[in-house]
Image 1 (tube, rainbow, N blue to C red):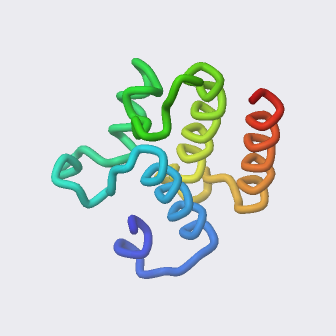
Image 2 (cartoon, helix red, strand yellow):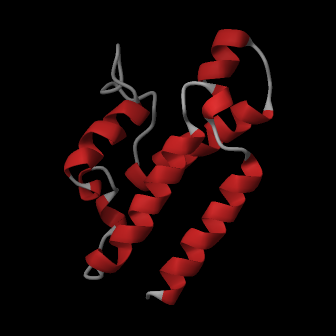
Length: 114
């Protein structure tokens, strides 16, 4: 992980970062250690750039079915949450309580609309 490897410090901010990476891995079906993420290209950076065109360019196609548009808002919310969890600066990251609150809202909105 970015912080553990660089600073060798375990923190709740690092845990939030790891959770954000886990969200990205889950919804893209890509790992930050894949060959495409070498040099300056990171999983987070790839998601940011590709999602500017369409969230469906980064989401794992196994998660998409005939209800494509009903998932759009939920997917945008999940990727937004992941970005807020993986900010390069730990002081700019949301905390785990806010992460849980947002996850619960995403789930509720998704279930209410499907």
